[in-house]
Image (cartoon, rainbow, N blue to C red; front, side):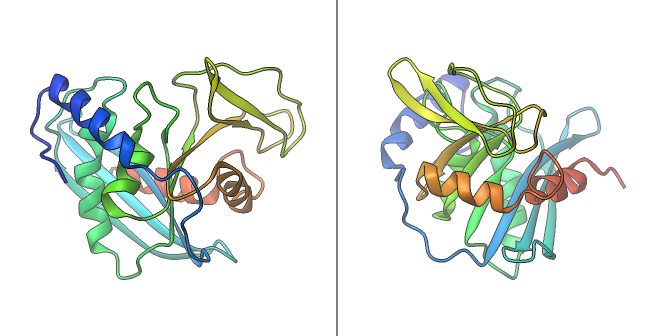
Length: 216
């Protein structure tokens, strides 16, 4: 859809062009296989290591996974991490035998200064429904969040809702959920909670992070 060997200025321009193509509403089939996506780095950040795991959506059992490595070719710039990470993620996705019906990405969807975080960007490139499941807030403000599991409040950027702050475990730090592509926010919330067991992070993220950070 676009080149990857670009300057940061050109990357920002690409984000602004692509964001208008996002579909922030439900355009997805019944979810049968849900994928987790995470990225780590090796050899002093010179190698990007992407992991994609595919779980059975009903049982959350691991069905398949793929790991891909490629030289890191884009600098670390907050707000432009998708240009640093997605090329390796696409390599990993190509290795899968089972195409997932939903992507849960460790990162932002539209809760991003230009509304194109890694989940939105990846969903648009692959045309797979996608959700951003971030461990920290990039932008936006929110009100008080109740302490119990399942509670959520809107994440706002001025007068626009860009996601939700979701408590996945009682009295534990929340996650920041935002739509990527072809998924509405309420469906995103429900599907993320369906992937929660006894941990803060969904099983998709836990599996993907373990594989992305494993140096063996």
